Image (cartoon, rainbow, N blue to C red; front, side, top):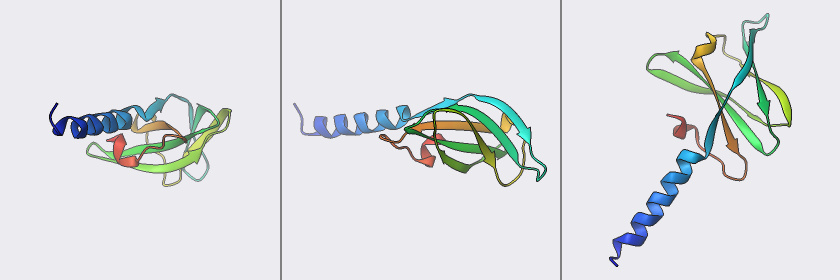
Length: 105
């Protein structure tokens, strides 16, 4: 066995963990409040946290909000303003296996 094998195995396992750390959470309701902010309802879980990303232009997507999960329905909002529903993605992460906003790309 070569000396490179353990290093390659470590890198492979590390990277595979990054891709499985996040899960897209369905948005079950979308509305806009009187201040023009998007409000998105999701079904959440305790022990998870959620990152809302909004696509500002076809080539620019930004993580706008991060919130800790509770069991049941919760609202996550885009404080900067409202875009159409199709511009939003909510990613779920396990608190015990946290992710990074760079992984969402």
